[in-house]
Length: 438
Image (cartoon, rainbow, N blue to C red; front, side, top):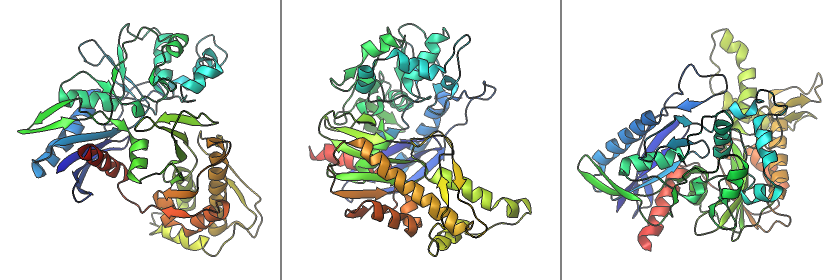
């Protein structure tokens, strides 16, 4: 049996043919995610919803031409952000992206950023019940901003972009999977947290029906092909399902962004975010740990002058990896918190001498910071860590043996290396296989 898997990411919309019997992803295709609407205020990041649907439908149609026998559509999507629909399911707004930063600004006459004002509106208990999810691009944050600016239509339905795309493809009312309901559910009950919504000034909205991962939410007919459509799931959970994360493992993902995560069989809040997992379980996680994005800042600095001179530094990352094999950091300290992250937002390089400022030492110091960050964030997941093995994924560990050695030094546990692969699409494949087996 074959299915189609689609991943609606923030840089591209990607799809593949999922061969359930062979357990592999075939014929991957992708198209760039649509550009944001131009001419908006600084920090505002919105994307036309119809452009996203159009791009997704194009990938789906192309894959169906190659796999007309496909019987299911499985979708994962970027989490956060929000789109408002009217009672007929038509968009009232653009897709307000998780990249949107408008909530970091102070309201006229206010003394703190709107994000802080929203957090103050919730009790500590409510914040914990919501999974301690509060970012500038969170759905609740963006809805709160709309409400405070008189732009929140009464009885509108908030959905994620994945929910809307699936609804449009199926021509059915939008439904939301709990893994996409980030910071919206009362995780004790699994239902919408209406008390928290009221405190945030966003009560009275028409929240969509929640959907599981086992039953289709509609039927898709496209170019003579018919397949069952399932609710979109969160891309983080899809990727971790794709690497077969086990409750006995600590997941460390080292890629452009980075995170540590573990599965819990009940709601066990910690000093971290808590999200819905599959089968009624939960995921304790710390996201936005500095990793590849910050390393790219260092690489860009090192190659700036050659680029300015019109010279290309071929294989720059391979050269950096080689340099770290013969260096030890040389006493340098490199805090990679160049962006707002789980480790702060004030990066710095310290301990420089006339002898130690080399490429190898600089990146070894950065790897030390990363490994220390993973260890510190893992302690936030549980007061008494119960994992007995690491599941390490993401391209950075494969690209930099020096980083892997530092992880091994800080986590004296067996390490399961997950090879670089299409983890999110594989996660969709494995979910589809579970559904077929059942």
